[in-house]
Length: 171
Image 1: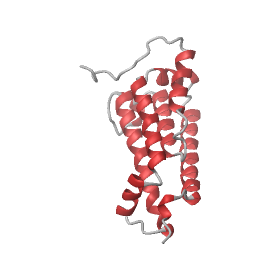
Image 2: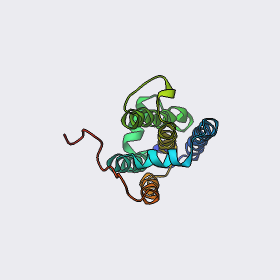
Image 3: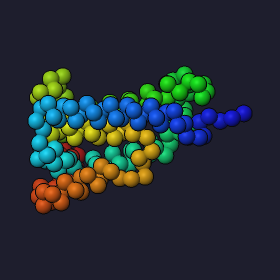
Image 4: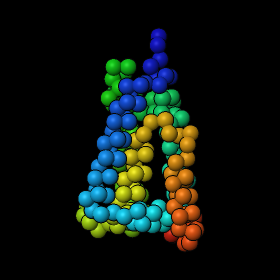
């Protein structure tokens, strides 16, 4: 019997890529419509604790390396996926991960969770949106893109006010 879960499904990759492009498009439209400057964005990236950025890259690595194997497949089967034709359910896991990243990072970097999006810094919203869209992209686990962007922002800002751990994490 063919094991559909042991090989990369190009259909799932294509749909996840389309979702990610749509998410990036919405983020860019928000940035343009709300006059988000490069400085706003870089300040948001610079204010992100390095431990959080590292965690996101490690989580992306873990998800991509297990996405078509054991853990993800168990979730997929539990959500009703039975074979190659039932791949729509398998898209729910990356969407859920992206939503968790968005809400979690918004709470961490924005200081609160509020249904009023206007309460957040515009640069933080763009950065959090990019992080969650990045979580949707397939096959990115081999490259630490969040760490690279964070380091570039630190270089641009002269490594002033570098945050390693989130406030309150170590006491």
